[in-house]
Image 1 (tube, rainbow, N blue to C red):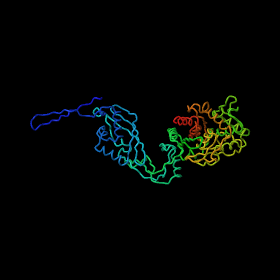
Image 2: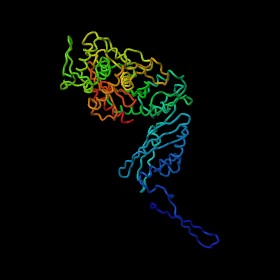
Image 3: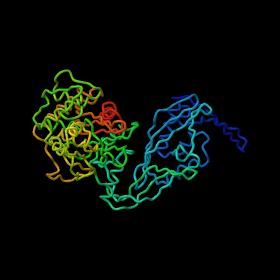
Image 4: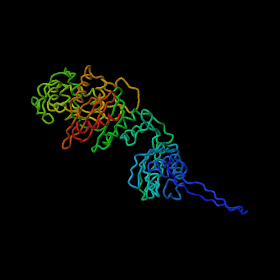
Length: 509
């Protein structure tokens, strides 16, 4: 029990009869359990608890110099925004001498519209030996500072609300917004939604949250909310345009797309895939008779007959003969060029690429990739390592990784639909198994081995040359039935720029 100051209330009763003077002495002051003499943490938590319970009188007692309209401000705020619930979560209190600050998160439930998440700060100070809340209008919401206000604005909105496969709304700033807008146009008529916006004293506005029409029908997409959230947060802090695409390998369904490229670049942008295309080159070589254990050369440089020389990144060469899987793991350019010229000159590379969605239309969203028939040995030399005529979208390369995991390439989709027989293309016997061995070796001992990727991850790095610009960084792969592609535009090395992003993404799941 904390010590409390005791005030003495003296009630003097004068009896007109002259019988005497009676003195009643009664202790008064804070009610038991009051945090009047508590520390800043307890005072702050008591204030937030009272606020959450709509106990405005208790809140007022905990405020230093509460304004005369304190109660009315709170009542009007809730009434004007039609708030019917409030949940508050305190952060970590920071104290400096006789002052303290407690950041907190909140969720207000707005009638017929949904939840509105916000954040603010509770400021406290010592007043006459007691911790008190230093209340200002921005305690309710930061937008109320300096005379700001909040208002609803009616806006046209789809008559349906697209949600994740579990029926939960998409995380905020998910990077999938542009893709959902296109889906909305396909599945719903326009009705009236609402935007809650902050209006500053100078008239500037800022949208805080958008609500779909109150009677909007929810339609489930193929997206997974936790996977979408992990993809979006994995790109936070990346200083170059980037994207992550995640695919369910056995169906082709899109589980996540976090796009910081703009213009739906993750699905519609064409970029040279660099060495990630060696997955397809390796598939062609496996179909042509090699296996993951086949012995191959990996010289520092290689000059094709009647063609231009090719060199490995950094001029590295493998000591002696290595396996095809070993050459794949260290991304040996000379191996894949030499073997392609020896075995794929009759068009085997293009045929293999078309098994992975290249040169064909995608029924669902976006585009896949393109590769042209090679005109001479130099074209084949560059195409084999994902340069020259070869371009692909991050979606396309995520689908390629999914095909390796599943053994079949699937048409992608963002809405659940019945699959048709032509939506699936099986890889040749033994090809998928060989590629899985090779992609596991990339992570266990190859170019992605230093990134601390979660156990069970298999993949392929890529660094794609771009004329006059920094190289593009790639990493594609799978873990379980989750296949993915990470792309960083002009990000440099795939191993240094894309693989760490993939590691953050996968570790967050």
